[in-house]
Length: 144
Ligand SMILES: [Zn+2]
Image (cartoon, rainbow, N blue to C red; front, side, top):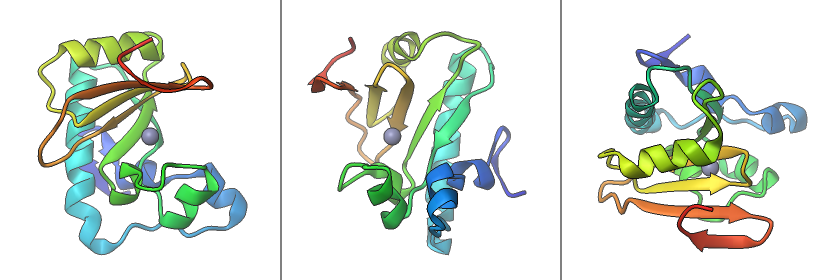
């Protein structure tokens, strides 16, 4: 097991049911390790904000093939290793998590409330603190 931060491992950041099912390689390039550590750091900030409750990562790094297979955005931050999808059931529903992060001082680039089922968070060198909602109706600014 390779620890990226006190509570997050490389293994959970690259685990992909889709990759396993389709036999796709989801190994990040070696030079991405520093980026993945920064993503884990962002998740540590979120974990602390949520009262130290377990943050369950459902998707972190995605190789281009895995990103295509899951229908990810063409320029997805997941392919750069800068993004993670997660939930924190012991804190509350994804909408409540998004609101809490949006109100915090965390320097995120994007927080997206996705399909009312999970939270997407990404960082960038110049964080925009952009808050979006994506669901069957499309993509829009703000939380709903
Ligand atoms: Zn995502």
